[in-house]
Image (cartoon, rainbow, N blue to C red):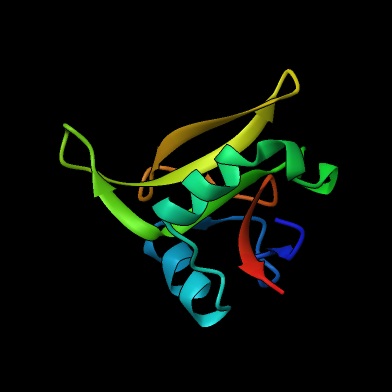
Length: 104
């Protein structure tokens, strides 16, 4: 957990939409997936407070929800507890409130 670093996916834009997020995650080597998120959540007490204001996105695993939309997992801190949620990749404007993760 201590080797995680935040990676911004924005390149001068205020937001990006859809598949561009996943493409940048791959190119920035910040494409952690579902198993990484599970590992991190199991050790949530070790997550640095520097991440507490961000939605940490795990673009390495693409899932399909019941409406047949592609989703990715994100984790975020709410009331001092790390929680997870699935986000529709093509229905969200990804901003600087979110970040990707890579391992140092």
